[in-house]
Image (cartoon, rainbow, N blue to C red; front, top):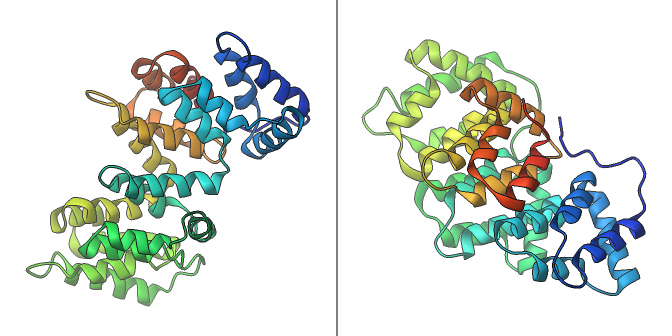
Length: 315
């Protein structure tokens, strides 16, 4: 369930004028910008973007960028970006920025549906003239690279059929590829975890527990390390409970010293129209505090205001 639903009727002209007014002249009315953009959903914001240009003759994103700054600007520009393009920009930033943001690559590729991944790949190529896969290959290495390349094909079985004999075989195969032998056959983990459908995998995880006497996540933790471990854990978590996966991403972005703003912003912006209510519920269950209170204690100013609007309320 979403927290940002949009409005049933609105005038793109009126909203465009309201935004212009908020930025024109001396000083900027950040509250007005937050109010307009959080009441609209992402497709409605696109209408305002076009209307802004046709009625005012200026580019709304350019205006926002020149008036705003820092993390608040990043949230607002993210909200103005169509869903697929937002993921495209984030993946590119994760690879072409200073260093590689492996967490971002893992999060997007492990959590998006086949359709979403394919749209991302298509738009990535159009935007940057090279394929998403090529950039992944040039920016990552070894088995981690292979997992990301597999996920980036958007080719997971999305059916609901569970073949019990195959599930039994997969569970046994994972056991023999990891816990049972010295060293780990990582390819087996990848090929099963990255291609089978969700219902099949949930069955495999149940059977695995019976065979190995431990949870699949514990085996991944003891058999793998680093980015590969993170990637396969993310796949398992997304299969089991996607909102809980995002709740954990948000928690880790804020707990302890400092804030991982990139992750916080990306999850809040990208999930607000999909499953933010579910994420909030999982967050409260997992950590005993509301997501709202966490953001409130961790961020400040307009940045905090807009994130709390995306969060949608106190639990």
